Length: 204
Ligand code: FES
Image 1 (cartoon, rainbow, N blue to C red):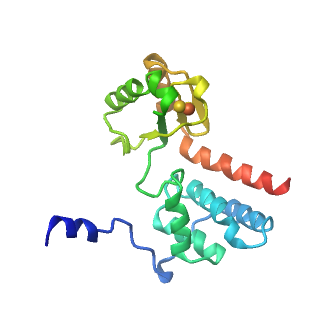
Image 2: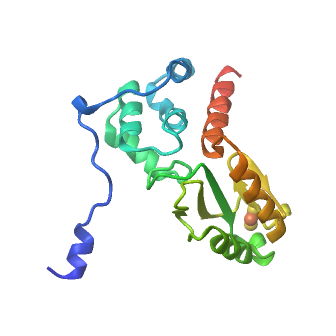
């Protein structure tokens, strides 16, 4: 078989759990939140996005197939539909497990001209990973992202629900040290904050 055909045939997506493999892991709070969100919309399909944020929090930051299956099960949607939504949006972590902290480096125009690639290279060297990779100790995931809509603070990093900018290498050193010393996951915190926004929006 030619390399081209092999590449075309390859499917990297993990297998969806069968119904008899389903293990529901949402906490009582998560179930309550999803139930509250369901009252905000005419149909459960509208809860897929906030449901995935709840799952991203409950499953520690990574939407493994079991997490997607749980959202599909609780909302009465198909696995394929929920997976299609989850893999469409880059803020859902579906490609691989992520670290406790995701450092997102904006490399769009304003950040680019203010040294974003220099900061990105510094982070790669300091953490020993490339963009899209997680450190061996599971603490940091490094990502390159498009404009974070904070161009006046270029070059900008996003970590969880916080923006940092303008940053230089000294700032990066301090930030990494602080994040290493923090007990909680900023990836999980971001998901939790977004769930709260969805809940609040529905009450407005
Ligand atoms: S270009 Fe980086 S925040 Fe807009």
